[in-house]
Every structure is written in C-alpha cells, then in structure tokens.
Amino acid sequence: MTKRLYIETYGCQMNVADTELILGILGAEGYRRTDDPQDADVILVNTCAVRDNAEQRVLGRLGELQRHLRAGDVLGVVGCMAQRLGPQLQERVPRVNLVAGPDAYRKLPDLLAIAAAGTPVADTEFRSWEHYQDVPQERQPGPTAFVTVQRGCNYKCTFCVVPYTRGPERSHRLEEVIGEVEAVVRQGATEVTLLGQTVNSYHDGRHDFGDLLRAVGAVDGVRRVRFTSPYPTDFTPSVIEAMAATPEVCEHVHLPVQAGSDSELKRMLRRYTREKFLDVVARLREAIPGITLSTDIIVGFPGETDEEFDATLSLVEEAQFDDAYTFRYSVRAGTPAERIPGHLSDSVAQARLEQLIETVRDVARRKHLARIGSAHEILVERSAKRGNFMLGRTRTNLMVLVDLPRSSVGEYHQVQLTGTTGFTFTGAITAPQLAVL
Image (cartoon, rainbow, N blue to C red; front, side, top):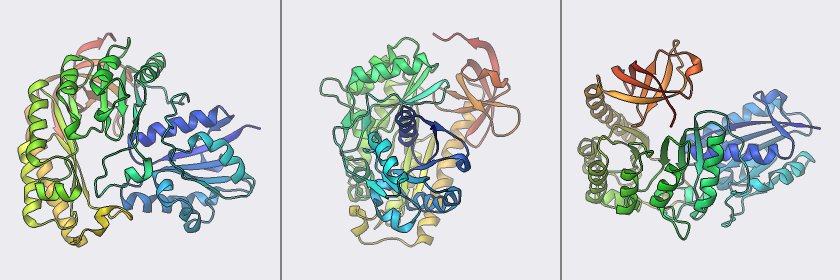
C-alpha cells in the first residue's frame, strides 16, 4: 500500500535541499507526498538548531501536528535539531517516535518501519563518508535549483552549533556535482545555487571552489550560478579570479561578518580581523564591478561592550552592505560561547538589535535609491504575495515587482527599476523575453 508523507522544512537552504533528498529516498520506497498532515501516514519536520527561537517554534508545531496522528502513524523530527537533542526530543514530545540526524536519511525507510511498528527509534550517528551523491532528489520543478556540494563544517565558531549537528566538512566530487547540475538543467532549471556550510572552502582532493565554479558555469543550459554561504578568508585569489572570469557567476555574495571588532571576532573564533574582512570586500568589489554584498551580524554576544557594538555599526557603514540578516545572540547548549562570561540582558541585546537594524536600513536605503533608473536582467521566479504582480530577481540579488502573467515564471526580462519600498523594487519591462542561452 502506498504510504503518504507530509514534511515541513525550517531553516536554511541546506535544509530545503535535504528535504528534496528525503523525498527522493522515500519516494523510491513508494511514499507519496501530501500537502495535508491529516492525510499523512508519516509526518516529518525537518529542523534548524541555529537559534533557540527556531527550536521553540518546532516544539510548538510538533504539539499541533500530534492531533493528526492515528494508530500506526509516525511523527518524526529530522535535521539539525534532531541531531542536537536526539532521544531528548522523544521525552519532551512523547508522540515523536522517530528522530534522525542529517547523516541518517539513507536509513529512513528502515527507521520508519520500526517506528510504525510501535518502537520509538533515534539515529544521530555521524557518518563522515555520507555524501548522498547516489541518491536522486525529488525537486519541485522550477527555474532555480539548489545543489549541495559540501556537507559539514570544520570552523568551530564559539557561538555555532552546526559542527555538532552536521559533522566535519566533506566535499562532493566535482564530477558528481556536474552530473547533478546537468540533471537539474534537464528538469528546467537555468539558475543553480551551490550549497555548503563554508562553500568556498570546497575541495574534493583535486579541485578547489574556483575549479567548481568554472565547471558549473560551463554546463550547457546554465545561465546563472550562485552560492551560499562562503567564509570570508576562503576567498582566495583563484576563487575570486574564477568568479570574475565565469560569466554565469552572479554579481552577489552573501558574506557573513558576525561582528565588527577584532576583540569580539576573536571571542567568536572567527578566523579574520576587521581589516582582513574589509580587504576581502575590497578585492571582491575590485574584481567584480557592481557586485552586491549581504551579511549576517550577531548582537549581544557574551562580553560585548558598547565600544564593540559601535565597531559593528561603523563596519556596516564602512562595508556598505546592500542587505544584512541581523540576530540577537542565542545560547546554544554545548558550544564554547555558553561558557564565556558577560552574557547580556535581553533588553540590552534587543535595543542594540533595533539600532543595528536601523543602521542597516539607512545604508541600504541610500544605495537602493541610487539604483532607481538603472537597467537589469531579471529571472521571474514566482507570483508576488500581493496584487497581480510577479517577482523577479536580478543577477545582483535584488527583488523586482513586474507586471507580467503567471506564465512568465522562468523567463528572463530586461527591466528598468522605477521605485523601491524597503528591499523590494518595482520595475518596468524594457525588452521582450530574453532568449535562454
């Protein structure tokens, strides 16, 4: 009998790609996806563990999903939160009868059978050899696709739980990545985003990230190449040269900085100084004219002084980020930062977050207003949430509202930016659909 699977995904693009992987593994075993948990025999929640509020949200959602369970049904938690908490999840939410970390997805059919038979099961073993390269993913058709090129992380930043939930870094072989890129192109994608925890540290033993960018850009049918998330000091000269020399590589980099003072970066165990980070910014802008930069910033890290916070604000101004994802520090049990003295109060951290957000918005607002009237190529991705407009993305990662029919998804158009509200632009079509190369 065909079993029905319902799955919810929280967190980063890596989790989205892992959900596609899970769908491929279980689809090969006869499971069919449903969009209604009421109809499902198996309910899975693919989780994030980076911040506490993400975990609390999942715990609340698990409580809601329990009401859909019937005898023999499975409620499972997979992903980073599953890896971090393991069997503790089954103690906190008794109806959870399956817990599986990111290296256990290949075993999901067997684990589901055990859970369905009435025995709670958990698998959080690290398998450093597991790449899943032989597992076809079940992707939603569309013009964009995620392709995982690296799993795990070797950079043990003191605030970060990822090395403890995804294990050590390992890169997929270049030939296997290219095969996967060719497969998504056959399915209709023209833009590919390469994924890794520190993606530009990619090395398969023979090829570095620069080699990978050139090879992916050379795949027939690939028009755009993106990647996330890189580590600042892994932008070697060869990687930057490959970015500049490969026309398909988009002019946007998400470049997490986390903090603006050397003393705070040292406590975070980030492997660069403020000066070195700004040098990377300068080298990227020199090599790739018009590049846009976004970043991640944490406020309220243990021991953060007024002077250190001011240094973060000044870095935002000096680096001139086009966008930033800003967060209050969230304690992660078992990470070194948990033991650093000087944890800040919620009120102080929140006040600093609000000030940082305003600084980021001021910088972005000035830059965005200066872009009005400029011309860009967009790839139409989806319908806008409001009105009858469509959303397209420029090569520089700007989102543009355009007046096009729903059938335009996947098309490339030339537009002129006519206005901006926050981080979204309006645009007027200036040329008919551009041919896909």
